[in-house]
Image (cartoon, rainbow, N blue to C red):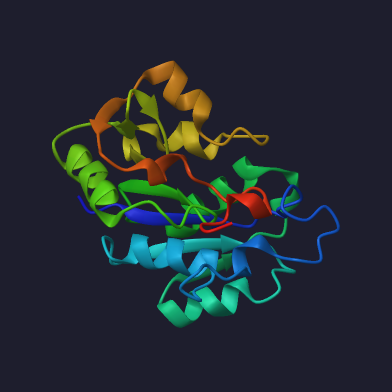
Amino acid sequence: MTPVGILLAAGRGRRFDPSGARNKLLHALPNGEAVVVASARNLLAVLPRVVAVVRPDDGGVADALRALGCDVTVCAGAGAGMAVSLVHAIAHSRPGARAWLIALGDMPQVRPATMRALCDALAAGADIAIPVCGGRRGNPVAFSDKHLDALLALEGDAGARGIVQRHGATEVMVDDPGIFRDIDQAGDLPGA
């Protein structure tokens, strides 16, 4: 069972730039690659299909992701919260998808080896797999289709956190501090 990668790239990034003038996902990393491109490239290194969900006024995010080979889908209701984008992406991945690796577009430092380990945990029978480094849980998170109905019923901005809390998860130990490093503010950028 090869999961479908889900890349959530529909947020506004108001903490990065409250005015909304600068899109954090398109901000260049020290190597010149955009944040969202690096996030997608790491996911694509592990999975053959990545569904990337973007908002209608994404400022070029969709174009950058299509150029990499992502299956891009526009979520008109993305402003209503992360759950709306996640439900949209999972519905877009159907039929046929039996598992999902849900990653965030603003987490470019997650190693492909970590994502591969989560996929391996699903293949070994886990229903939910979550990375753990230094005793702390991080992202991305992998789900089997056992939780499809619960994923499609999500609402608000909490994402799938409630499903993990209610059902537990197989913890996958990794040596990857990238599972904690999202780009919420300009100071979060590597080298900042």
